[in-house]
Length: 385
Image 1: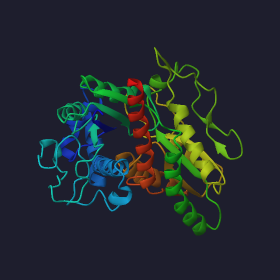
Image 2: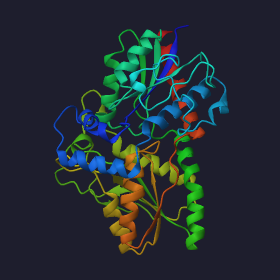
Image 3: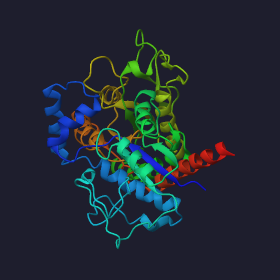
Image 4: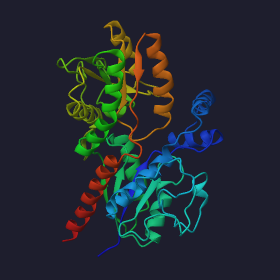
């Protein structure tokens, strides 16, 4: 039996404000970043303290490792703020600290952890340490022969997810990889978001004395990466029936990628929202928008959150829940964009805006990722038989 492992891929985030210029150069593949953009991102990070994305992803990996190795809730007490425990293997044995671990503690052999798991879980980041290529090299050094690789971005944008895939495959060598590109419609993913949504919906509905609608969001991307042509495309939203306002006027054709077909990102994002809404029938009405449009040249897909809030204010909406369904944990696009910017914007429109807790260390999310990992490892075995 070949040695198998799981590799989780995420965006990555710097530990300090001073590291942001280097981080942004990674994000844009080395292209120059205007100083004004650098300073704005530094300002946002300073307001939230730091982005916990890397730390939480490591905690998620620990939960997945526990699930895969049959110890269930053994990792459920783990929390990313716990400074005395390791949260993932990340390609570096516990007894051998690495510079990649700056700001992230390493467990010692006598600490609580999954010792010598049958299926270890590694974590690699695209734009920060531990970088994906370094982790893949470590996996090979550890003797891993087959790996289920899962991008912790459920909705598949061929441009961004493709970068994760290429980074992993470039260093794979003889390591056989099964790559899960998208899992927007996994039932446990929708279950996890629904679990977070229900208590916030119940509380706000009680506070305002009536049912509260929901705005689901995912990260916007440049139009050119997902649509065949932006010419004539109308990115505003329209209601498709009385319960969901999600479709776009004009339905721009998705971009076709040679050998891969149409880019599924826009439909993937809306599909996740639909599956969550189905699980929470007490939602009276819901919409979908794309958030956190970038500062790079050219249009980004919409409708934006701000445009949607303008429209809802005009319709008399006074209370609203915003749930990002394109993100699996807290980071700057949630802690700053949603909790600061969108809440302030909504308040100026006389809308009370609340956000459910992010998935973070949700055990249901861990089961979803574990399910994907098992499927990937099974495919690797089936391909050899």
